[in-house]
View (cartoon, rainbow, N blue to C red):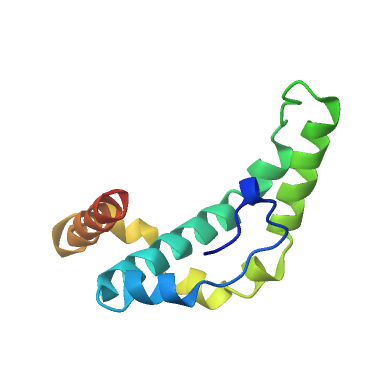
Length: 118
């Protein structure tokens, strides 16, 4: 059993047994997870300037707003985003809003997120 935050977890460790049971017989889950990850990273990249200017609330503790801003900045400056430029270039969301055959991408996109939500 993996340690949890409520059980004083101090770090995350891989759970290969859980990964195998969730994805080995359901490869579409892994494809959906990858697709969601790419969309999320691209959204972070595209919205980076906005996120940097966003005034994060203090949530009752004055230091929380500054911490949130710092963490968003670290995420946006991370090597994860900068190392994904090839992935960002391979995914063109403008195709989702065209008519004709390209409109199928929008339908597929909705289907993938419906499956992920389920």
